[in-house]
Amino acid sequence: AQSVAQPEDQVNVAEGNPLTVKCTYSVSGNPYLFWYVQYPNRGLQFLLKYITGDNLVKGSYGFEAEFNKSQTSFHLKKPSALVSDSALYFCAVRDATGRRALTFGSGTRLQVQP
Amino acid sequence: KAGVTQTPRYLIKTRGQQVTLSCSPISGHRSVSWYQQTPGQGLQFLFEYFSETQRNKGNFPGRFSGRQFSNSRSEMNVSTLELGDSALYLCASSLEGTSTYEQYFGPGTRLTVT
Image (cartoon, rainbow over all chains, first blue to last red; front, side):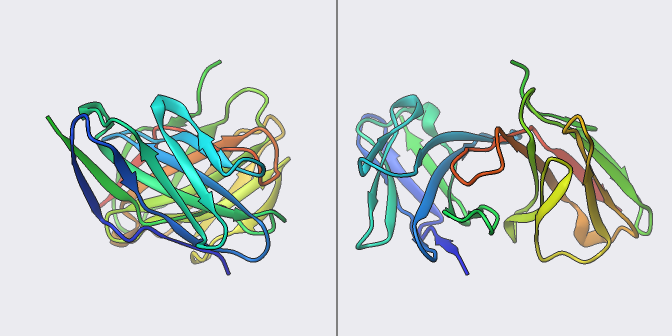
């Protein structure tokens, strides 16, 4: 079975400060990892993915994520948060075989205060 | 390119009725997945289709069914609606059926069952 854990329901950060949204995963074999963001009353938008290669992945809107195989983590980061980054963030994992569907975490609400 | 479109955007049905939701993927995308999103259960996977074949199915009762047409458009049907079926139903498309490709989500259909 594969699973994703997002241990924080909500993360609060001041505008201009760095932000981290945590994600750990469990999967058989090599993982393919994704981050998505959801704004109110909208569908999910793709931010970035890790398939293979460099452990630091850069994505849209200045976000990046670091893949750590030993800690089975894929934390989302941004050096300087914007108020407009406030949204619901989902981490997702899929095994390399593709035999299982994409599995999402429970989501973390990011609140950036002015 | 136009994004993923879902129709209708909002729907109100009565318990016991049936409903059909439609999804048009991004042009050229052959894989379509459906998800149910609720505040309590988060994002739950329903089905995944690739080239008209169901590749994966989530843990939902048989009242939930889906199909994909030769033009990659997809429909999902829920029969004998229950109050608990009230949710945001999200459709996502991806370029191919392999694990490496990110999914692009539509805005969702908000289903309310009364």
